[in-house]
Length: 367
Image (cartoon, rainbow, N blue to C red; front, side):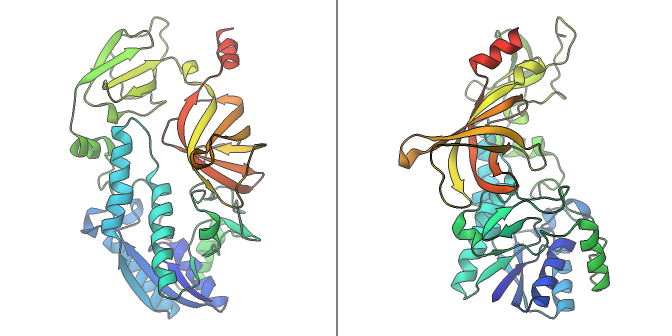
């Protein structure tokens, strides 16, 4: 097959490209330029989109003897990932830009252009497995990235290759060293690549501006002020700067964010507990599922897989996913993705629009 190897400049994508070559594919390396000014993105261990990374990707491609190109997706990245990130915070939700980048850029945009150029598939260094065309968790649970790939649909997965899904990270680094790849010891990237200094609150201040608002308890009593509701996320404990201690002396957590009124509601940790989620923007990793079924729900990239019941409700053009957790969970915020699993197979995903406690849970907590 003619395969595009997405090369970020890290060790995983370099070894993935090497394996694709070893498997006999006709491989072309491509690095995605996601910023008009790449030096504004992080370098070293903390980024995945820097000028340094593009050089590392090119050197790896040269070592493997494959053609290499840099594709400029900076305008699309700004519109589909950065602007979306800002808009979600403006609306009081907590987005995951890495999922949106996978959905809109690394697969949708790259596949669109690649297939138009005559390529058959895109190969990446993600840790996940495709079994009979279905997306499964990776062998290495510590590196599993099936959650962040849960936004891919059946059509996209048919054109994907994940060569590292059956390998643990330590073996990938050893393989890179054996191949003479200079990135063998390069640290993994982390955090949000388009926020150069790691100051998310400062980035949002520049994008949205500061606006003084109230921090209140569940009864509406004013406990303090803040400089923008976008500076908070559900479940946050630190940095609340509340001058009035709780009557019981226990810490408070962010329970909800009200962007219209620019208010942040705080309270005890037990008030964070929810046992029912409602999701929109359903994406199926295989055939569409109707009705009710049981499986596991995951709401964070490396979060716990929680036993749950699932039900698709609503009209065909406005399907919603209701997730009923067997046990309550905390810190779940609108804007996050819930990925549904059947054991280790990804069934699909949805964007959380609402998280609530049912009457039964409220009674249990009260009791």
